[in-house]
Length: 149
Image 1 (cartoon, helix red, strand yellow):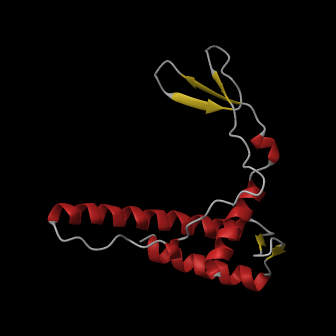
Image 2 (cartoon, helix red, strand yellow; image 1 turned 180 degrees about the vertical axis):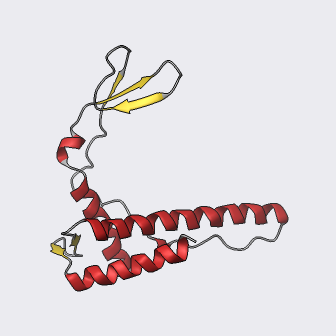
Image 3 (cartoon, one colour; image 1 turned 90 degrees about the horizontal axis):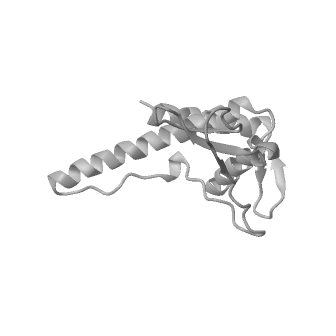
């Protein structure tokens, strides 16, 4: 239930944060004299650029993308060999870094936006109240402490 609510919260926040005007904006890509690739809503005045089309919208009735939260992510199982141990350590560090970033984003969203809506299992939308926001904020703060050491 919590996984479902958190994934719906992240999806709802993404939809709230991304205004329709940005989705319809013209985007350009170009390479400068130093070979650096740039992306912008405006083409450069003195160089060639390539217009980038936005991706097509998802088909009607498509399932929303699944958001993995810090609580759902687990490190890989223990390895026996030394080279595998190094790979395991690197994989664990990557997971911890991802968990930290997710926890920070969740906390920022909860502290920044005044109204947060979640999508219920029946498809209806409900705004979370002050108690729910406080509970989620506390959990996000705990996750930041746990994963961002």
